[in-house]
Length: 326
Image (cartoon, rainbow, N blue to C red):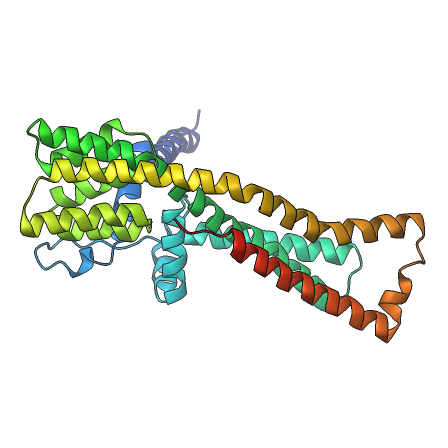
């Protein structure tokens, strides 16, 4: 065996070992579940605007929009992406802004290629590609609304837990930690983040203000306002939170009754909105040329536009009738 071949084997073996070690270190620094959990907590804590103005703490927190430093610096310069980052966090998504933009780009390119394969002209292909970009973005408000509803339903139990902890002699921050450890998700994550902020040195007032910023839910803001007033004026916070929990439960019961009473109106709105389209489709399938005059004759086009306008107006009026605020 020659010396060069022996050196090649030795250095090749060392190269493989170093490659495996580097891959393990990369995984442990980026893909480790514990590291992900820490990054998620820091991202949640960084969403509050009040924390960055707190002069009592020297902790620097910065949103991470991408795991690549240069791309993260470029994305941080665009103000609109900060709102998108906040929407991601409020929806409970673990994606970064860069990840979401990459998915939108893939969807847009896929829609454009599909249109090109089908022989659609370039301008319309671009429009179709732009339409394929919307689903990942439109999914976020739906996820955010669903998560806020879950937090609202879990809030009375969390307030009762805080009230019982205060009656047992625990401090307010310890009561927040109990909610973070014992409550269900997603409200547990938010209260755990607030407890972490207080432990890091942020004042209770600013930590609660950050909680209200991360979770723009009216009932949670009532809780924050009640605690802040109690911190300034004093009083029985345990009794106040118990009353607030019962008030939120009664509000949800009333809202449920209203939803039941408004269900008939919603069903009527859905039927009246969809009936003309289903009827036009049925007529077209039975007699394809029967409705052609509505799309060819100028009078027919004006009638169709007027009917669509009246349908939009009627839908708006019915939506205002059944949209009852509690």
